[in-house]
Each structure stands twice: as C-alpha cells, then as structure tokens.
Length: 582
Image 1 (cartoon, rainbow, N blue to C red):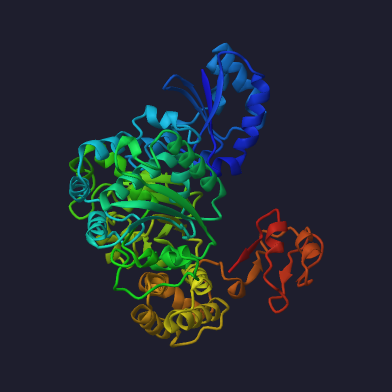
Image 2 (cartoon, rainbow, N blue to C red; image 1 turned 120 degrees about the horizontal axis):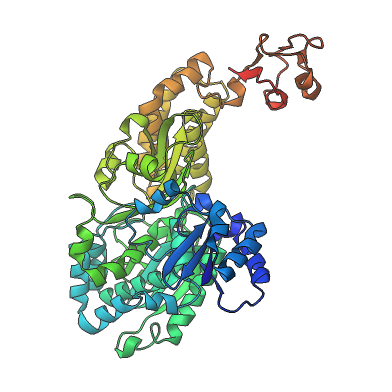
C-alpha cells in the first residue's frame, strides 16, 4: 500500500505539508506502507488530497484531509480496513470533475511523483524524444506538429509548426524559449504543469529544439513560482544525469542545454519581444515587429517562443501521431485546452477539455455550476487581455474564432466565473487598474490612455459619472487598440468594451441613477433598516463607528444616510437580517 499526498502549491497552501508530516509520524516507519507525493491533479477545491494506491491502482481518494486525520489514515492503510476512511472519501458528483475531462497536457499531473525521473520514465516519459531523435528528421517532426493542428496555447493561437519552421529556416544560431511568465489574474495552468510534470516540459522543449536546430534553450518563469522553479531545477539535473539533456543526447549528435531565468514579475514580459529584452538583461519592453523573433530574437538570432502548455502537448503528439491530436477538437481549433476555472463556482481548479466543447460544458458540467443561490451572470475569459462573456452566450463554443467573436479572447486559459452579485463596471475598473500598473510606458496610447480610462471608471463607481463617459470610454478603447505597440496595450480595452457591449445598462444606472445594481460599489450604497424585522436590540448602534444609527431599546432603529460611511458593520452585527443595502 502507498499513501500519496498532492503537494502542488494549492495543496501545500491548504495544509498538505502538515498532513505529510503528520502521516510520517503516524506511520513511524511501518513496513509495507510507503509515503509519497504527487503534484496537483486539478481538483483544487478539494485540497488537501490524499490517495491510497495498491501498485498503479487507485484504492481510495480522500479529500479535504487535515493533519488530525493522519492516525486513522495510517491505521486503515496498515490494517486494510478501508471502511474507516468512508467519511473522507470523495463524493461521486465530485469525481465528475475529472471524468468529464480529456487530459493530454495534464495527463501526468497528480498521478506521478514530480520530484523524481523514474515515475515519468515508467509511464512512457522520454520515449517521444527517443522516437524523434532516432527515427525522425527535423522536417518529419515539424510535419507531425503541422498535421496535429497544435496552435500556441499562450493566447494568440498561432500555428506552432509555422513558428518552428520559420525559426529553422532563418540563418544563424537558433534559440528556444519557453514562456512561463504567467501573469493573468486567476491563471495558474503553467505553474501547475511545471510543479506537477516538469519532465514533460523538458521533453517537449527538447523535441522542439531538435526540430529547429537549437542547442540552447531557456525557461523564463515567474520568480513568484518558487516551487515550480525548484522542481524544474531538480528535473533538469536528473535529465542530465541520465544523458537526456546536455551533450550528445541519447548518443546522437544532438546537444542541448536548458537554463532557467526567473523573471521579476512584469506582466508585459509575457509578450514575447519584451520577454527577450528581459532575458538579455534589459528592461522588459516590446520591440517593433517585424522583424519577428523567428528572424531576429534573442541576441538578434532566430528564436522560437512557445508557452508551457504548448510544449506539454508535444511529447504526446509525437508518440501518438498528429492525426490523433487533430481528431480532438473541431474544424477550426484542434486538440485540447487547459483552463484555470475560478470564481463563484462550486468546483474550481484545472480543467482540460477538447476544443469544440461549450462554456456551459465547462462551467456547469465540470465545474458544477454556481456557489450559493446567485445566478450565473458572466465569465471573464483571457485575463486582463480578455473580456466578459454574458450568460446568454453560455453555449459559445470553445475555439479561437468563436471566443474572439464575442469580444473576448481564449488567452492562456484563465476562466473566472461571475454571478449576479458582481458589478461589471467594477470588473472593468479592476482590470484597467491592473493593465495601467503593468504598462511598460513605451507607448503613449497605452501609458496615458489606460490611465485616463481607469480614472473615468473610478469616477463612475464612486457615483461621479456623467453623461458622455460611456462614449468617451469607447473612443479611448479604439484609440488605444490602434495606437499601442504590443498585445498588452492592444488588448487592454477588451474588458471595458465587452462590459459596455453586454452590460451597458449597468454603466447607465451608475451614471444616471447613481445606483449599483449588484450592490457592490460602496459609494452608491444606502443602508436601510426594515422596521418590521428590527427588534431594537441596539447591536448595530453600539458598533456603528459614526453613531449614525438611532432608536430606543426594543423599538425599530433607523440610519442617518448623511452620516453613514457605508462600512457594512451594521449588517455584520445584525443577527436578524433587518439591515440591507439598496
């Protein structure tokens, strides 16, 4: 029997490290029971997760485990009486979260031990590299990727084979870069992939390096991902010790090294030319294109850049054939896509589905629908560069063209679910604040334009909006899209444009009626006490910081709106639900 603990960042944050230590103490070196770890299986809503395995067979999956459960888990594993664990076992409806997915990039995540190379090799790891190096030419590798229809999973959806081929055909020393600078709020796909399956990334990068003729590769990863960096460093060292990385890989004349570069957290460095500038030791700011990186990239040499998820698909495609990958998805977009499902959703975590599924499939079938009684309102897709897709477009197909037609973008895969308690003007303001702060400042349109948009949105949510603000926002959006140099500025207006397009009435209510329909904008709230419900207990009055609540004991109270600072203290103190915001 083996006990395996999910120790990705999400599991550790939920207490998996404490569970591991408690299980070590409870087992006390017991013979016949091994203790191991794995990465994130994607069910972040159930962490910490502990699995009992008999060989490769999953015997029990235990969820929301605490260190207090260690003794009973250890006793069950030793005695074989697994009925002791029934209260900790995952519920059948939660199993649907995995059962309804098709996992290619995530196929090993939460299954193997990411800290060792042996389990990766045991499940077919590095066989694709062997196949490519020993049995295929560079052209054949690129042709398989072309047949697969694999497009860049970092957001743009550009054909992977085309970038590889363009780099290979350009004269000069070739460089390969993995873009792991995952900066979208609500996105954590790349982090989980590196933490949970680092050798898969290495193998995908080596195949790509072979195809383009590169002997030097880099992984540009956020410094805020310390666990991912540690596990990738370990994996690189292990691959070198097995002759899978470095000089004359697998006894061939192909040599390649991988170097990790920890980025300083600038969102703009997710743009490939800004990333290259940073990698060269300069300030991360985008370059003019053309020339494209495939012609002049790192050190002005031909450079290919793909993101983590793109490389994670490559070994599977080489082993199973391009046709097998292309058979998943639809006519316009091939294969699968990984999403980080977060927000007001019952089952949040990592989701991988074939292209061609709908937003409804992901949010309601896999994610289980909304938390609480509030109805689904919108989904924010694509991070700060994306947009908000409303409830009446829930059956939108997940492919690049269909998502773009809504005004949003696929992006790297952040999917934030919003319910009717969400203020859409507030959502637009949040993302404009982010992009304003993250603008590198090179372009006037982006540097100044996003700031002006943010100021207008801040006025609106404060109740200071005026007629013409919506039209001014739309005018600024178009100017910024047209005048910005890189994708950050060109896509920064998307959250504003989509919320105006689909939720214009909310903007109008904020401006004309000084009212927030979602009751989220503090300056537009008015707290009232229902005299039919109020018991006159005085709890609200005693805790009001401005003494704006008055009334006699056991008599209905009232609130002086002119003195009220809308802190919400009265609502939190009222045990009878007599106070509400209007």
